[in-house]
Image 1 (cartoon, rainbow, N blue to C red):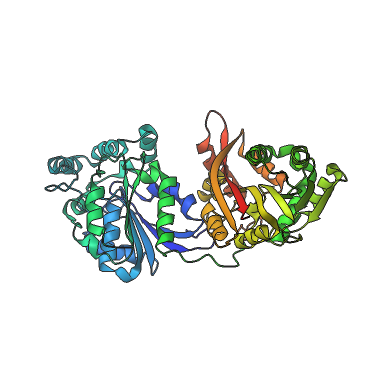
Image 2: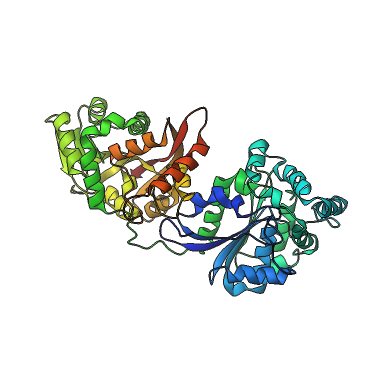
Length: 523
């Protein structure tokens, strides 16, 4: 599965015993913005997947490498984590890094090493030999133990071909019983991240100290714990898990840098789209008003009296009157990249305002000419944050302030996930994560910036209502990687059907990942 933005790494996802690649489904929309993903169903581990011959561990590892990129990060959950470690030990040139999730280097307890009780394990093996389907259902209850939503997880597991379970799964149980990687962890050359779950009933949290002791001398290795998660972390805590994976790879230098000129959007296309939307924009801009009002209320914490206020990305000028009311002595400047928006705003904003058509990354303003910048849901269209923050630092007076909101990468995650179930094209606009904004601002010595993210949830009776609203706003899909031509009726119907799985209390959610930022120039 190709990345929806510029690929910064190759990921191979290895599931555990008794599941298949569907266990990774919730993570795909979180990982694909920056990674190409290879998904595999593993014989000996996945119900219904037969090897066709006597399966050995070495044969399985060779098969995984045959299906994988020439070099990749191997992410393994449960038994898949042990397989990832084996690959790093025996084919280190193919492994950029290892991430294990809810994985025990020695699954069956031995001496003072925590794990599953040996008698219970052997009894379970006998149950698999007698009735694999029933044994797997019992195993599922162990996997969801500790979760805050066990029934929902059990329903998700029912999609993993449970009725196809056979004694072919005994091969995977054999690996679980015999693999002992306690001493070899320290010999893993690529960076490794060991992720444990706080409420895991199969891989005890007590492992944290034992693993940390063995990899403590490795500077590029880490142990992390997911809070409020069961053994089924990929299903139970996908957001936290995806964040841990990305942070680990970023901090160990395993991610390829994002191309400098990675402009997912053509600025002219953005400007034209919003210009066309100007007349009808305010009729559907519920989220924009809500977020803007939250941002406006944050100004009560700032006691300054600005001489000049810049409304950056002013759109229709909706917040012009409120900013003027708050700062009646200040000169208001409304600026937007969309000429149609500025014309509309000028018509409603009065003669005592200045209106400019310009790009936020190239402001037509003098150095140190602005005291306050107010920008709500506009900066997400800037894909060169270092240019943006350099310009803000230039035009702000010493002690000047910029308060802004932007959209983060989890925006419209439900819509993105629904499309991902249909095809590999990019149907939803992508936005920069907060980490990239922080990194860009950190390179400018004259400013300090703080960020926080909040989720805003909108609700709709139909998916088409959401799509119509985005089109009216001018915020439809404008990425370069959008599919060429019209989307087929079959693909659209598939997406609509997939989105229905998110319906709750009769309504469909649409979540917006809103980043709130405060940037201040040093005095």
